[in-house]
Image (cartoon, rainbow, N blue to C red; front, top):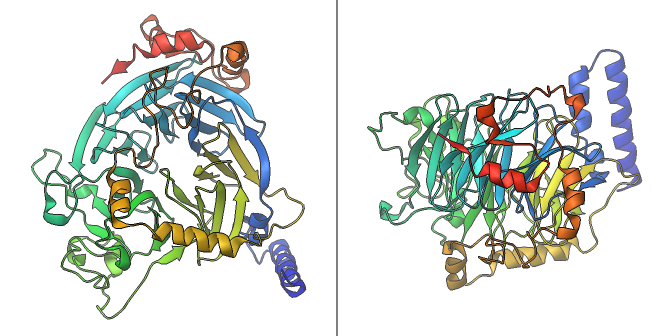
Length: 519
């Protein structure tokens, strides 16, 4: 960075402070401007590692207050962390028979309700009881791996799941019902055998009626839950909109691994063997993309309603609007998420097969590359309020990143070569190779079923095996929720004890979780 640029940044910071002091800049605006500062991103450094899992860590998620982090792993355990101190608040068996792919807190439940999905296709709920024990419950099942779930914003009861069987399910914890909404099919001729294996699902935070799904083809499909007839009298397998970069339409070599909505209703899509794209609300292809040219946007607007992201899609066919593209990372080997970072989603973050975290400005400028894993970074989670990131991947720990470095980071001198090489690797695949990679059931998770534990594992045979020599140490780490968490120690009812998990003894946990309640 030049001396003039450093001086300009310092001048802006001084002006902001002065304006805040005299009341010309509101405290909230000042905080947002500071949290979105490029200087803070350039000062990111490893704050600490959270290392108690005994397998690859596949998911991390903050609670609404941002003081607790929940993680799930190939070891089938769920751990709640005080990430600032690195202390385990609670550790328990999820009840899944295979690798946990996602775990999230349900909002407005005092962080006592956690929903999970896994490689065994199960969707489960864990309830932290007043006595500090955990009760796990079977909710639903996919015929194949269930990669992601999406919680309705602000709802402590409703969430959606998707799986490799192409099924999207709606779950309401109040009535204990699981509704199979539809099975996602490919566009071509809509033959029932051509199922899209779904990898990801996301809900629009500005309109919770809209949700998007994507998987083993080139399209992101947007649905409106208001069009679903709960008596099953209508076919809900018709999206209200499709999104796809024009050059990928008809490409049989790509699939989608990650989706995210911004607070401005933009849609972020991460392709395997390709790049990341940001779609604004006027870039949809309409409800039937086949007859439309790639730039004939806005078809079918009349039936989407005023709340639909395509409400402004009135463009002429001659207007060639392309999504913003983000390049440099490599996404070939695993199901990687993608997300926004910053109080107003000013940045885009993604992991990479090279073990790095990539951070772009929303304009597409790559500003930061951080070494984060010896193998692959799969998941990056932004803190809800602070300038903090949590990342995980093939290694058995979680990295917490904060702007604590004393010096600003610069992009590696070889970054141009890295970007160029990764771009060629993302695009140079033969049709046969691409079709094989996209369509194989184990396309994204290279498991070797089964090892000597009769479980899936990643890479080596001992990845999810427990070390007998460390059993005592591990038992000490698996704790009940601490006294300072204001949770009573009263005994629970006898009829719940068989389903409870105190997080302290692995053998007891496994026995208890085999007796889970079902809806």
